[in-house]
Image (cartoon, rainbow, N blue to C red; front, side, top):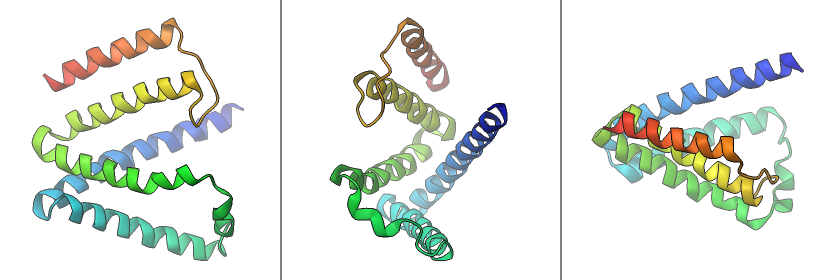
Amino acid sequence: MTSVLSYVIIVGLVGGVAVAVQAAMAGIITERLGVIENALIVFSGGFLVALVLIIVNQGGKIREWQTLPWYVYLAGPLGIVIITSIGFAIPRIGLASTLTLIVVSQLIIGVVFDHFGWLVAIRPIDLPRLAGILFLFLGTWIVLR
């Protein structure tokens, strides 16, 4: 179990690094070309890589796409919101401040979704998690000031 947890931690850290590097690149694209152009370039690149991976994996489970609930298809438009907000914010407030706002909002929404069981299993808010949210606000204030 510990080795599985180690892999999960490593994958999570690699994902975090990718978010920061992609965000910095999105800021450059937005500054030079614009917000919508940034979204098109980022998602086109992602689409091409995903397409190659699907082809290499002989289609994977893509044929089962119709079994998904309708609302999961909002992930694409939400991705546009994510990448355009990142591209918009970085040239104005910097990479660290933008990532701080993104992470704190993700964690707060994550706690709310956990508490009510929206799209995930229920995990009620308790005192330690509430304290964590307060520390997040304090940390955000420190980074942004």
